[in-house]
Amino acid sequence: MKPVQPVMNKTENFRKALLGLSIIVVFTSCGGDHGELVGVQNRPKWYQADPFGMVYIPAGTYNQGPSDQDISNSMTSQSRSVTISAFYMDDTEITNNEYRQFAFWVRDSLAHRLLGGEHLLEEGEYGERINWRKKIKWDDEASTEALNELFLPESERYYRRKEIDTRKLNFEYYWIDLQAAANKANREQGMKDRSVFIKKDILNIYPDTLAWIHDFTYSYNEPLTKAYFWHPAYDNYPVVGVSWKQARAFCIWRTQYLDSYILTNGDVLVQDYRLPTESEWEYAARGGLQLSPYPWGGPYIRNSRGCFLANYKPMRGNYIDDGGVHTVKANSYWPNDYGLYCMAGNAAEWTSNAFDEAAYNFEHDLNPDYSYEAKDSDPPALKRKVIRGGSWKDVGYYLQNSTRAYEYQDTAKCYIGFRCVMEFLGRDKADY
Image 1 (cartoon, one colour):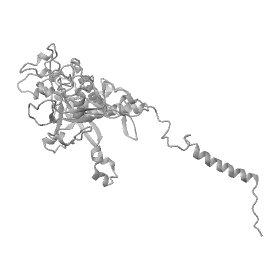
Image 2 (cartoon, helix red, strand yellow; image 1 turned 90 degrees about the horizontal axis):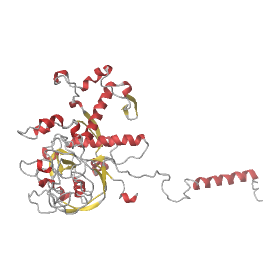
Image 3 (cartoon, helix red, strand yellow; image 1 turned 45 degrees about the horizontal axis):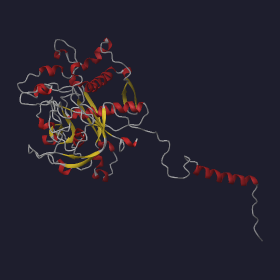
Image 4 (cartoon, helix red, strand yellow; image 1 turned 30 degrees about the horizontal axis):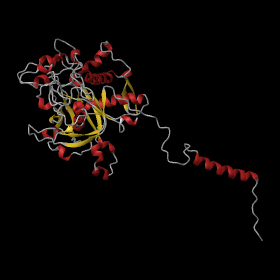
């Protein structure tokens, strides 16, 4: 006898059909991609605008190193072909007025914290934050007592002038040591606490204005010490007297300053500001010209009319023939073919690289870079950082694109400044 089959009514059949249909809808309606691999949809369209005050340097290959014989027999560089990715670079050296914005930001941040109250926002996910919308009333009697800590003590005031104690303009900043994070030994150990790669430093960021005096013996440069950094007459002159560490701190501050604005508007972040590698610096200085000893391309420092093309020391004891006794405005003379001013002369410039005479022998030929984070306890030889471009007090040899020199990272000189770069996001601007 056959078993009796259960009889399904119309309601049960309808429910099963509806369940099967809903399953099909779930698997076919996600993003409307019909089950195909199409990537995450509705991503925002993005275009990288040129950062303010910067020029675009396209990617390319160039012959790095001397284009002629090594007359000085320094043996610190050799000619080789290297490739550089696209990036942006400041069209001028960082000026006194631009660096002063950094110094004033540090000053005001300290003042806001001293005043407290409405000058600070409630602690959130990232800790205590400054209320930058609240103005600082420096002359207000109620604020005077709280802000006195920022000023020189009365015993140190000259003719009772109430001035900011620049020794207190300390900047606390952080950066990530990606080199250590990428180290195979660290990755094999399975580092669970990534905070070990976050580095911190507290640094006084005010330029060493006394460099104008201590850099030279038996030379009267007191007027520049008194006025060069703060007087409006020198606003557009390159900032000098900043150490390598101060230059790096400026780049980190500039990055965070821009990131805060971008995040407030809900936009996408861009790459960090940083010091250029010496390979990037030389590539930019050449302006797209191969085998040229100077940024302007010719083999001479004068043009066809006999006019000097850079600010340097033309002859012994003669500084004025090129138009400047010391530094001149950062946009003086003609720019190179990339639109960069004073890549030779005026102020020598810090790069991110540590100095090693043999660096060209072991650096990669793709975006060459050699960096070393020197500790305070390290010997002086490990604290050398590459400077490029020559300065107002140097002879013509140091103006050449390929000439390498160095200074110690914790020293500040009245003839060394810097400019920033930012990595370009993508292959080329033509892709946009």
